[in-house]
Length: 222
Ligand code: C5P
Image (cartoon, rainbow, N blue to C red; front, side, top):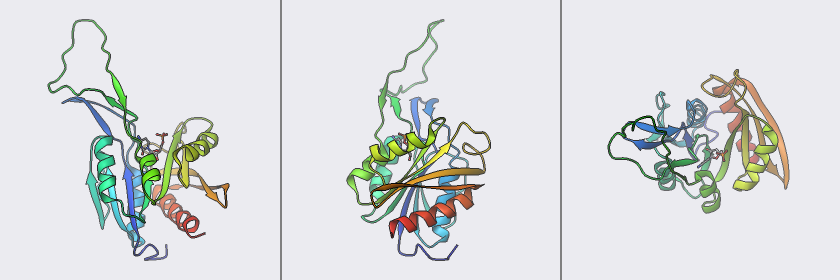
């Protein structure tokens, strides 16, 4: 990797799951180890960028030289992103944000009531990536974890969210994706009005991160 290629740039990266409290001991969350986002943060910092990593709860050390902001809920993740994003930041949205949160969070641990089931009312969380794409001039890179029709879903997601690039991975495969150290990405991006495609990996998440940063740089400057 060419050292200091990203010098002078600010990258904001979200990683890990968000957790949405049901009561003080229970929550709703998505499956995410945070490894891909942490690898991107690490590589971007190694390449000279100022990096802010907004992270949900994960078992990973903050990469050297990275400012990590720990959050729990999607709402808190959105606020941390809003407070840290600059006018010309690069925004890489790796986090597995919970789409819904309980409408109410109980103050005390909820108790079982006999044999009855339990319904929890959910409301939609803000879409952080869509908010950034709509309200800032940041270059936005999204991720799409899919289990089928990976490329079709990813392309329509890129257009729906109004972002410049999306990295799709097939999380139904057990050799890549969730919790693994390896990953393979189908990257789609818009170039001269056309959707272009590029495959990265299979390789370690840090090699994939390095390659992804190179693609982001190329597309941003084309
Ligand atoms: O809509 P979906 O969750 O599949 O989109 C995935 C992409 O959108 C990821 O980049 C994820 O980080 C981002 N996202 C977000 N806020 C949400 C949901 C998803 O930033 N509430």
